[in-house]
Length: 197
Image 1 (cartoon, one colour):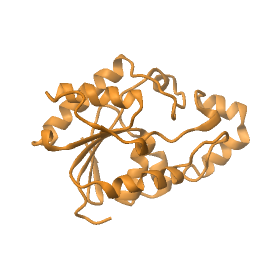
Image 2 (tube, helix red, strand yellow):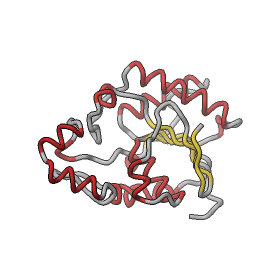
Image 3 (cartoon, rainbow, N blue to C red):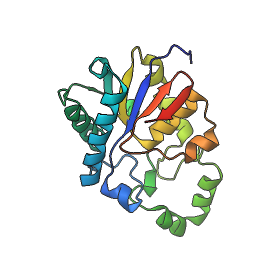
């Protein structure tokens, strides 16, 4: 990646009931809860304070309900038309396959050997039932990063943020797979560096 790549303002979708319960959402289409809506407003305030010309940014979201809700609340909070953004299928969360809807505790109880294999190499392990690994997710979203031509606000998912940090900032795959990706905040990716606001 070249240092002149546009700045990315990454916002993870707000909280859902499944986040609260520790359930693996993946590509299950779960809506925001009340806290998630508050977090979307907070992300909007942070982004408006951070980017002085925020109305000139490109805005792109994953097509899932929780990301679209977050984007629309965020834009409304910033005084922008809520629907003035694009969707990109490449930004959907990685799928946990047969494990979606389960908590990690339930996964470890039901399939201890497979859970152990994932813990040993979170980046490359793909869960059973058509699950994706982070490595597979990187290949899906790499073209999205290369296609960016201007500073962009992206509303997507925790897995997508980890893939961005690995690709754009050189964060090691082991570290990226375990990073906390905060809700209600903005992850600013500039060149090879990143910071939370």
